Amino acid sequence: MKRSEMLTILLGLVIAGAGLYFMFRGVSGDKGYNTGEAVSHLIMLFGGTFIALLLRKDIRYSTIAAVLIIGISSMASNIYYIFFSDDQIAILFADIYIIFSVVMIYYGVALLFHTSASSVKALVCLGILAATEFVPTLFKLYSGNDFMPFINTNMDKLAYGIVHLTVVIILSRKEMLLEGPKKRLDRNSKALYNGRCTPSGCFIDVHDLDSLLDDSGEGWITYDNGPIECERTISLYETDLGLRLQKWKGDDRKHIAVCVYGADSYTIPLAFPIEHIVMDNEDRSKVGKIRFYGDEGVFMDILVKDYDEQPKGYIETIRMKYLKKE
Image 1 (cartoon, rainbow, N blue to C red):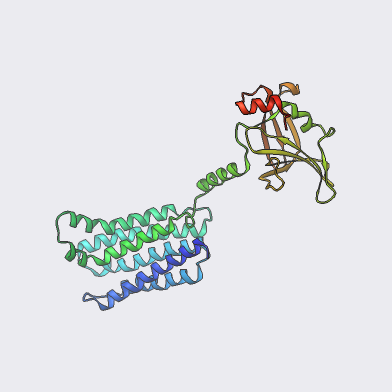
Image 2: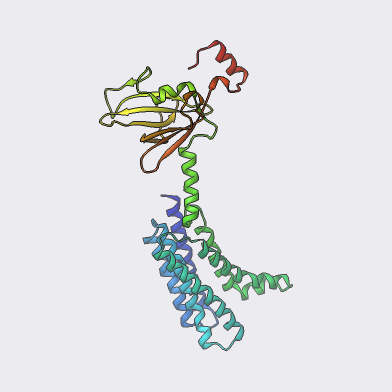
C-alpha cells in the first residue's frame, strides 16, 4: 500500500472518528443537542467514511472532500446559534466560524473545478480555524485559571482544534499536498535539471570536434541488431557522463544521447535527434561552445575546451604524460 493511500485512509478515519465522538458527546451530554450539531456530526461521520473507503487512492478528490466536509459541517453546527441563540458571545463566534466555513467551501469548490489550484490556501484557512479553537483555552490557562476544570468545560473546542490540526498535518505531507502550477513547475524544472542536465563545468575536448561533426573517420561501432545502426562515444570532461553519437536505421538524422561514459549498462537521461548544430565560431580550433538543436524546441549547449591546456592534479598530469589518453 502506498504511503499516500495510508495517509488518505487515516484522513478519513480522523474525520469519521471525530464525527462519531461528537455525536456520542452530544447524545450523552447534559446540554441540549441541537439539530445543526447533529447534522454536522453526521456529515463528518459519513464523509470521513466515504474518504477512507472510496477515495483512498485519489489524492485530489480526497483532499477536496475533506475540505468540503469540514467547511459544510462547521457551517451546519454554527448556523443554529445565529437564528436561535440569545448569547451574544456565542453568536459572535458562530459568525467567525461561518466565515471560515464559507472560505473553506470556496476553496474546496475551486479545487474541484480548477485542476491547477493549490490546496495550500485551504490548509492555511484550516490552520487559522484550528488556532481560534486553541487560543481561548491557552489564554485562560495563561491568565491563571484552574487547568482541569477549564479543560473539561472547553473539551469540544479543543477536540475540534485537534481534529483540524491533524487534518492540516496530513494534507500538508509531500505525498498529499496539491501544488499550484508555479510551485509544481519549479519543482519539476529542478527535477528535470538534476536528472537530465550535465554539470555546468563539463566540456568536450576541441580535438574531438571532428569526431563529433563528421560522419567519416574511425571510432564508429556497427550493430547488427536493434534500431541503432552505429554509434561512436565522445568524452565529457569534469563529469562521469559521455556523449553517444548515433545513426539509427531508417533515419537520415544523427542522434545524440547523454549517458554514463564507458559503462556496459547505462540509462539515457537525455536523447534526441539532431536537427541542427551551431558553433560560436566557424574556426573549429577556436570554438568555445556548441549547441545541438533537436525537435520540438529541445536544445543542448556544451562547452568546448582544449583538454591539454586545462589545469590538472598530480595524478592526471602523470597520466597525461606517461599514459595514453583514453
